[in-house]
Amino acid sequence: MTSKSKLNLLILSLFIAIYLFPLGARPLMEPDETRYGEVPREMIASGNWISPHLNGLRYFEKPPLGYWLNGISIMAFGENAFAVRLPSALSVGLSTLLIMLIIRQACLREEIWAASIAGFVFLTCLEVTAIGTFSILDSMLACTLTLTMSCFFLASQAQRGSSRQRWLLIGAGISCGLAFLTKGFLALVVPAISMGAYLIWERRFRDLIGLAWLPLLIATLTALPWSLAIHAQQPDFWNFFFWHEHVQRFLGGNKAQHAESFWFFFISAPAMFLPWTFLVPAAALGLQKDTPPRKTSQLIRFSLCWLCLPFLFFSLSSGKLLTYILPCFPPFAILVSLGLLAGLRSGRQRLFQFGACLLLILFGVLALAFIAIQVIGINGVAAPYSKNWQWLLALVCLTSMTLLPLAAYKAKTFGNKIILYGLSMTLLLGMAPFIMPDLSIEKKSPGSLLRKHKEEVSVHTIVLSDEDTLRAVCWFLKRADVLLIEEAGELTYGMNYADVSPRLLDLTATKSKILANPNNIVLIARARNYRRWADKLPLPREIDDSGRDGYVFLRY
Image (cartoon, rainbow, N blue to C red; front, side):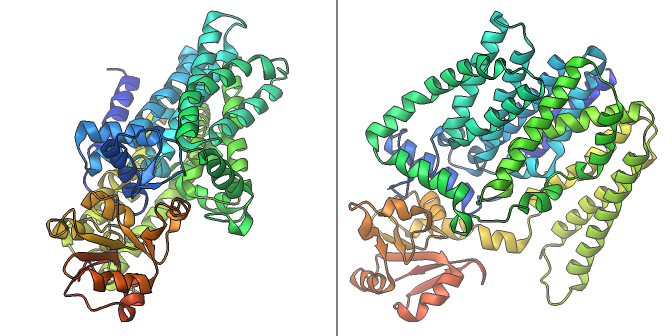
């Protein structure tokens, strides 16, 4: 096989080993994974695929496409962690193919090596892996946006008015509509600001309207059937979804959910782009010094708009999570691949060597810190692992993270340098589900405790829970009628409806409910919450827990 074929085989192997094989290895984590398992489970159980519900309550925070995909996966593979995470992983795989496709279509034949390198860069970024093996909607959103951007760029390069251009614009519109059905109006903003900036940069002012109207029309038609159906079924959906989930989150200031400063992504994003962060200067120099063909230059400009404008937009938003910048990773991979290849081919290796040294130092320090915490202990910090095999495997992963940048530094050919460098974190990424620290499992996964007592909870048992644990309780016990104590959290809006408001209890009402239903009521909650409530509630006749920082199961 050619070297390029071997790299494509490596990419496929990495996808299987990192994104598919470990999907079911670790338990579902609170709050996101159990939420994105429970909402589609309730859709399947109720037969209502239009209006999302959580614990039987109206849950209007997201449109339905992510729930639909998870629901289809659950019906195909069962109610388990693998099924709940599979759509996210497959979204990463499709995004990788799209990244490779856009380079193959946009660049000259001698540059198609960049397509495989870009796919490799994307697959091995820390945030892409962390989110792609986790059940949240961001990988699906990034995938549909990548398809939108790819179709639009290729349409912009096609002959004006040709059937190829029309079909590509229709494809951009369909994928944009699907992105809207995944996470809402954000799907319109990201393509609009990126494509608009690119067309202005290219001085194609006529195309600002000419290339936009058809995708916008098709996106509207794609999203319209469900949009009308949800309005007919839940007339208040759009009011809540638009104002609370978009306007308030963007402009809410300190009151916005996950409020952070403007600089949050600038400070934290470099860690998410690892291991490629330290090669950004080398890639930038390669792009600056190289004089690529026109089609490649257009792709570089398009990718810069695609990377920088959404990044700034997300930074301007009051509410921020690291997952929000995932749509910026495909253009990052394209730019890094083109820049590194241009630089290394021309013999400019100094910045690459410097980046490999920095990565080696970083991972070496992390390995030493891990050994100190696990073996020696520092300032009362608990050892991450109680099982010897886990911490030894973690040490092997950290050791490989140190040795591979060294091997990349010493490699002679540019292909080997890039591949060895990119492989530096892959062993850790693949093994991460098997070596999650004990405290992370204790704090984030009540599954083992709930499975242990599942048979004790009949369909007639009254179940009480706190907001922190509710999603897991519903998922593992297959219930949608759990009573909440003290706070409703993300279900506050759903509780505002008169037909369900009695399902939120204060501590006085909780005590009365327990006393009125002896031998037929259980409480499942975070241990720290129960410690706050214990002196205000009756004594349980049975109590079990998953650790001080974990969860409690109480039978009254």
